[in-house]
Amino acid sequence: MRAREEIHLDRIALPPEGERIQVIEEKLVVPYRPIIPFIEGDGIGPDITRAAQRVWNAAVTKAYGGNRKIVWLELFAGEKALQRYGEVLPQDTFWAIEHFVVAIKGPLTTPVGTGYRSLNVTLRQILDLYACVRPVAYLPGVPSPVTHPERMDIVIFRENTEDVYAGIEWPKGSEEGAKVISYLNKEFDLHIPQDSGIGIKPISQKATQRLVRKAIQYAIGQDRRSVTIMHKGNIMKFTEGAFRDWAYQVAREEFPEQTVTEKEVQEKYDGEAPPGKVMIKDRIADSMFQQVLTRTDQYDVIAAPNLNGDYLSDACAAQVGGLGMAPGANIGDFTALFEATHGTAPKYAGLDVVNPSSLILSGKMMLGYIGWHEAAELTQSALVRTIQQKKMTYDLARQMQDATKLKTSEFASAIVENM
Ligand code: NAP
Image 1 (cartoon, rainbow, N blue to C red):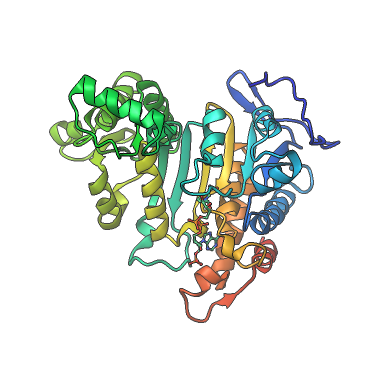
Image 2 (cartoon, protein in one colour):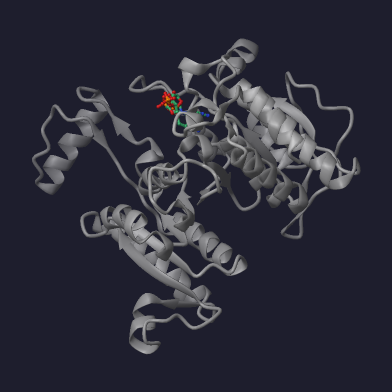
């Protein structure tokens, strides 16, 4: 990766105005006209990106009366990059995200079972965006399949760089796969059938602890009550079980004053965490899925390995209106790539019908991340007002009687009018 200071993009013209966000002395320094790169994405990406940019631009103008403005810089990935660069993930895109520190993207296509690696996973790994942060909270007026969706107010910190997503796997019958199987069978006296596909699941102390550190720091900074470590350590003892142990170690060694374990709360504090302390607890993954449904309001921040976090994020999102409503971000030490959490929904591409809320709310997170809280709040409140007026896209409208079904672009216009 090149140094942050220099940028030489091959096929992208830098905007004539705007400055870059910088990291100075461990802090983001945000100019009034920050250059923020965006990737439209494939499938429904262009529809939702157009709609969301109108909403964010209007919120920024309204909040700061024209004193601040996002200067957008388009980057390319996926199908559009293939046309322009002849490759799906060009260097320009990595360099520009590194250089400009904060960026936002639509969904990108990942074909299943082709040996073609996920562009999203590649972006996260190369940029070392190790925490996937997904807040899942109920917005009033959104139709939900559960009785008390308002009880959900959870922020999931999903480890983003390793676990089964490390991409260490070989197909059945491959030379590499056969070698690995023979080695394991011989050296460890195992009996893995030769006709197996094989994958390796690494979970490291370093990656676990930086993720958990971020989750605990967030919980402390946002006055959250607890951090739950989600794992399947009863079965995968040295990966998921170790994730749990390393997570407790971070809390114990780095945040002894600000945290207390659930065990201590039971033994010393009569079941009630002392005020101002974040309770650290852990749950086995299968139980976690049940708990978020049955005892939703007892969970707050959740730290999970990659695969658990992936599953749980979608399951939680379903309780508050589905993937069309769920925002997300991939965050490293400072570099942050905000994104819609759903996929490219190819059957709706170009039809101007899908829900842009996931991307709009990811942009709201982004505005908060750069400290533009007024614009962030305006974005969310106008979105909520629009939904409360029962003006919504098809996915929400079909779950409600007497809703007005709007196109993606009409929904964006309604949000802007509501600011
Ligand atoms: P998907 O694109 O998320 O779509 C699945 C279904 O979810 C859609 O058919 C639609 O349901 C609903 N949906 C998704 N986004 C919506 C929106 N904005 N508004 C309303 N409804 C929405 O999942 P997929 O079909 O499994 O994946 C398609 C491609 O996207 C794959 O190549 C996958 O790898 C990729 N993907 C990318 C990302 C990413 O870039 N971060 C994430 C996930 C998947 P109905 O049909 O019921 O209306």
